[in-house]
Amino acid sequence: MMKPVVMLASALTLSMSLYAAEHVINQKDKAFAPGTMKVKVGDKIIFKNNDGFAHNAFSDNEANEFDIGMQKPGQDVSIEMKKPGKVEVECAIHPNMHMTIEVVE
Ligand SMILES: [Cu+2]
Image 1 (spheres, rainbow, N blue to C red):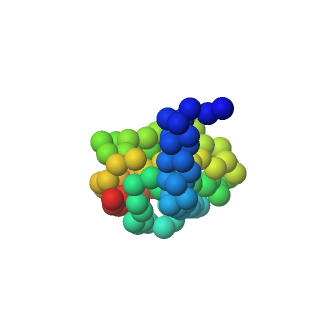
Image 2 (image 1 turned 60 degrees about the vertical axis):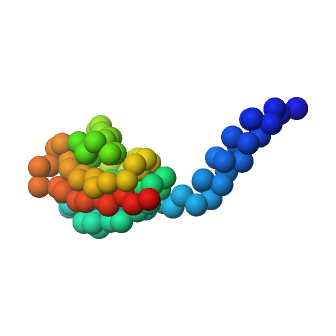
């Protein structure tokens, strides 16, 4: 039998996942598409690599710092946006790749 605390925690997780949206960012021809995106806290961003070579998307912004690392062609990587703020996304391999995600409450 589950303890009440555990039941509450799983109910919260369930309700959060019901509201969390998923957004796709494509990496194609050494560019992020779309170039800007507005999402809510808790939403997931799925980075797709549609190129024939690796990418390495990352952000240094304090609010949602992340580093995907080497992402091979055809791989999907999911990142959760945990705090509100501006997220400037760059690629460590291709300096010209750049996009912005605005995370709101
Ligand atoms: Cu790249």
